[in-house]
Amino acid sequence: MALLVLRLLALSLLFAAATPIRDIADACSSEVKDFQHLNGSSGVHLTLHHPRSPCSPAPLPADLPFSAVLTHDDARIASLAARLAKETPPSSMRPAVLLDDDDERRAEGSSPADESLASVPLGPGTSVGVGNYVTRMGLGTPARSYVMVVDTGSSLTWLQCSPCVVSCHRQSGPVFNPKASSSYASVPCSAQQCSDLTTATLNPAACSTSNVCVYQASYGDSSFSVGYLSKDTVSLGSSSVPNFYYGCGQDNEGLFGRSAGLIGLARNKLSLLYQVAPTMGYSFSYCLPTSSSSGYLSIGSYNAGQYSYTPMASSTLDNSLYFIKLTGITVAGKSLAVSSSAYSSLPTIIDSGTVITRLPTDVYSALSKAVAGAMKGTPRASAFSILDTCFQGQASQLRAPAVNMAFAGGAVLKLAARNLLVDVDSATTCLAFAPARSAAIIGNTQQQTFSVVYDVKNSKIGFAAGGCS
Image (tube, rainbow, N blue to C red; front, side, top):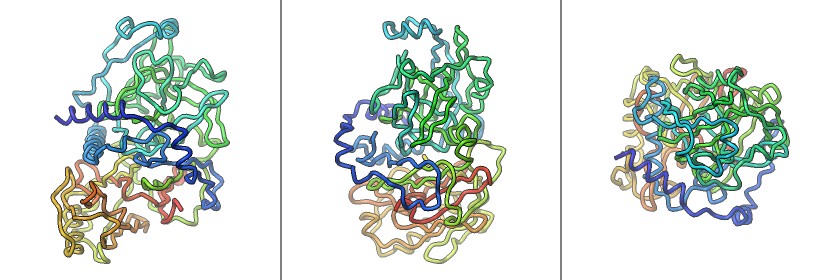
């Protein structure tokens, strides 16, 4: 049943009417950022949009119910759990199409049934789509701009490429045409980067009959992208980096909204961060905006003095994800009624694409009880999907208690009502937390409007309030 819901959601994203790009630009001209508030930062700055913002260049359907967002969010959590357990879900078998260059050039006039198909088991990546923020990335010579999902839980960057031999989902703007770029090159199977795909995508690389490396990126909600490993010049703001390795997708299906593809920012040598780091530096930062504002993604140097830091924690579960240590939570100045060891009972990941934060069960139960007690004068509402602590009204209209999340090293997230509660419909708001499965996850609702820096070189993550202003 859950798989059916996800497939129906995928169809709604694929076939929803899109807002014309010109109309979006006119209505949201005030959203253009000059980034003057990022004093002391000389990095590259890109505008970041909420997935449900009308000003996004690839917005999700306005009528997409929040229950669908939660269904997808739960699929992301399940895929992360499988990934950490190094399990392969039985539903992850997808066809990989292996073509030689002659077949590719003829593909626009052929059908998938005419091609050579190989059934390849795809491993558990991180579910991508309705919870992820989007930005623009330039690719090729001359550079053309593409709307891309940003994901700290993924490594390989990929985008849809013509001739879309098997399938391309509907995207905002034209599909990338490798033939129109003078700096494009496919990557041979003998290249080290082809071997590196196994750790970047959690799937083995394949090889075409003409010795072109084939990547397979799969995500836990049955979304996937299959195509050719390629290299070209990537453009980020006014900076460009040649010989950038990425996936040129020929079969791209699932919950990617209207984006052209995905930017991977995980800790892996094929991620965008690691490839541009020799030029721009081993750090990136972002401010995840609300649906009524815009934020930023910066790569490179940052204003170190404005942040409070927590060390990145090491974990043998997955070398590419960002682990940190949650040490305590207070509600209205009082610590939760749990032991300090409860916070470390599960590993903790910070993730840009998870919407609802997951906590160890004992910690979540204590938080739910404490928030409900602090809001005892507010009428309760029925549970909504995975959210069981709900109230009548909207978050902006309710008096929510001050909730602080503390991390090792002294970093603290001081949550406003918008970070604590999430509106699920016009009359109901719920605590934006849920019990964890195999790992606690700090989701993007709690991160909204904070500046968050990932200083990979110095192995630390920093938080600062008021990041999007």
